[in-house]
Amino acid sequence: MIIGVPKEIKNNENRVALTPAGAKELVKRGHIVYIQHTAGDGSGFSDDEYVSAGAQILPTIEDTYAIAEMIMKVKEPIEPEYGLIKEDQLLFTYFHFASHEPLTKAMIDSKSVCLAYETVEAPDRSLPLLVPMSEVAGRMSVQKGANYLEKPLKGRGILLGGVPGVLPAKVLILGGGVVGTQAAWMAAGLGADVTIMDVSLPRMRYLEDVMPANVNTMMSNEYNIRDMIKDADLIIGAVLIPGAKAPHLITRDMLKDMKPGTVLVDVAVDQGGCIETCKPTTHENPTFIIDDVVHYCVANMPGAVPYTSTLALTNATLPYAIQLADKGWKQACNDNENLKPGLNIIQGEIVYKAVADAFDLPFALVDKYLMDLD
Ligand SMILES: NC(=O)c1ccc[n+]([C@@H]2O[C@H](COP(=O)([O-])OP(=O)(O)OC[C@H]3O[C@@H](n4cnc5c(N)ncnc54)[C@H](O)[C@@H]3O)[C@@H](O)[C@H]2O)c1
Image 1: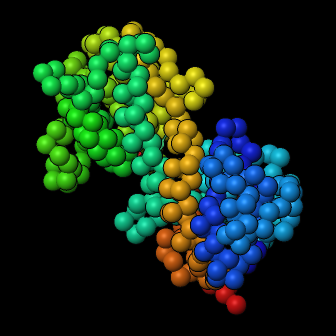
Image 2: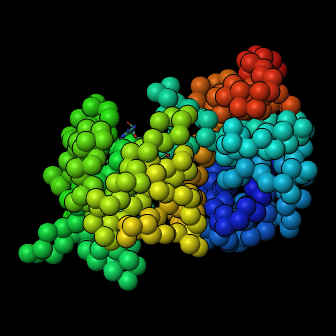
Image 3: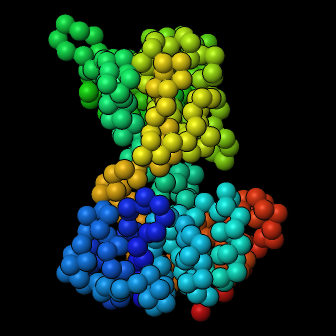
């Protein structure tokens, strides 16, 4: 198969969809890999490294789209790319269609095949191509929180781990899923006194089994949250209710009960945030202060660490990309039950119900296409 990897053109997006190591794996299997000139630069991979791995470099984004049977990307195509997409071309990337009507309509019009990372789904309902970014954001949330707790950045001026003779900081994590668990590991490793709140008892039983002694769990409810925020130095929002807006577990009136210089990192801000006063911020201007409480609410945290994020993402996407390249999308999606729900739009028809419902557009069953095998 001919695979094309364009350079991401979305503002501040430095990730790339394929590493030189990934390119080598595909080339080894007889596929042809084209990388757009400087596509890997933002993640620290030079054109030369791709060439050494057996890929070929193309000068422009137009060349890359024109030649490829499968386009591998990180973010959804943006407007300047719409016209470059060809009929029957397979696009393997994050799309998040349900929040973007113009993109959905443009992809319908393109008659391409859109396989979305975010809806590739394992039988246990986990989302294997979203997990890596949650892992990055979870670990980063503690790094950021520790930083903003420093006095010059308007924090309380407390060191997460304390020192001999001085108690460590208290870290409260709302939600013990992927983000919350990774945050807990990092905070615990730095010596903080960590509490994870969740509503799932099985999840908290698991966390109690695997976490070190400085991590405790507690049922998430308003009473407990109001009690815990009084002493917390760093609060991390990591709640997710699939398909819904995050609930506001910390409301505006609760800020007055917190210590001045408390830091809030609301990782769930991309789903509306679980802290009422959090509004999305950017890496250029990541924080704001309300009632002496520092709010960090960057909606694309992994974007600040493109090297790690690219490797984490491609570790997860490459096995699927290999199947798609080896077998073609129809056979690969027929054979792999994780890949099948990734199909969102096929040759002008929406085949993912939530996307059709979001815009009241017609919906076709994906099996119609998959049974049509050569
Ligand atoms: N800002 C970013 O850059 C970034 C990056 C990655 C992920 N995220 C977001 O982080 C959030 C968490 O993602 P995840 O992968 O950890 O999700 P997850 O599904 O693995 O975990 C969510 C957890 O929240 C718990 N929960 C649900 N309701 C709760 C409540 N009322 N109180 C306490 N816990 C509750 C669930 O039981 C679950 O354990 C999502 O909104 C995700 O989109 C943001």
